[in-house]
Amino acid sequence: MTSYLNIMFKINKTVAHSVSAVILLASCAKFPSDEYTSVDKPESVVVQEEINAYPELKSIKAANAGFKLGMALASAGYVNQDVSYRIADRNFDELVLENEMKHGSVVLSDGSLDLTGVKRFLTVAKSAGKSVYGHTLTWHSGQNSTYLNGLITGASGVTTINFESDNIGKVYPMTGNSTSVVELDPKGGGSKVLHIGNAATPANQSFPKIDVTLPAGIKLGNCSQVALDILAPDQAVYSVLVCGSVSITGL
Image 1 (cartoon, one colour):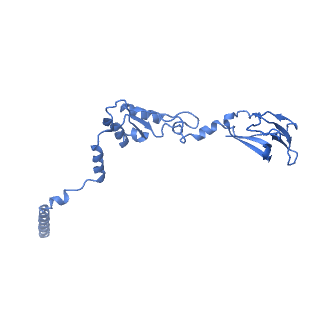
Image 2 (cartoon, helix red, strand yellow):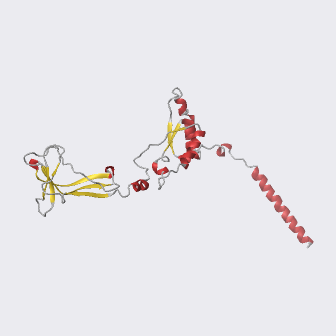
Image 3 (spheres, one colour):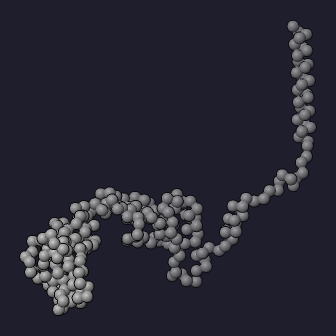
């Protein structure tokens, strides 16, 4: 047993010396210094250095201290002090939010206001010494249409005016010359029409005045169009028949 252990010890000792020799030899190897220590800068770094070399925008307009330079940006990035924060801090005096102050961003479905994000933005801007320009009061988009449409619920549909309850021969006043008289529909069927103009006095840019009673809750501002059923049997004398009804369509 003793001789076996001695043999193993000698072998292990020999292996250890061999490994040490390899490590020492490897550590003495030399590499060309310019092959691994010289690398090109990333393009993003080069571009950023070129940008940093420009003077601040605020310094360019320093002679006109009353003139403000503004920047539109998103609230989230600025509040988290990303690159937009750094750009704004270095170059601009005033800030305006892109969307976060628009109607659709702050008005909830019940009409209440959620200004949490706006207040957070204002706090960060104030601490950075920036003034904030409020957004537009109205915009072609960015509205909470669900809430707004809910405000005019019930103010939709069609209000129809016809002449069936009028007596034959009833006269409607005109805005100018000529006349407008209720007659039987010349096409037959027994319905009534409003005959505008006559052979003796054609209606010249003159129109009948018709009173309209809108349903409860509907105002004139809710109405979007007036539709007329018109028959012009004798254009030479500008005789016009309003056949059937006048429809006023609400929003």
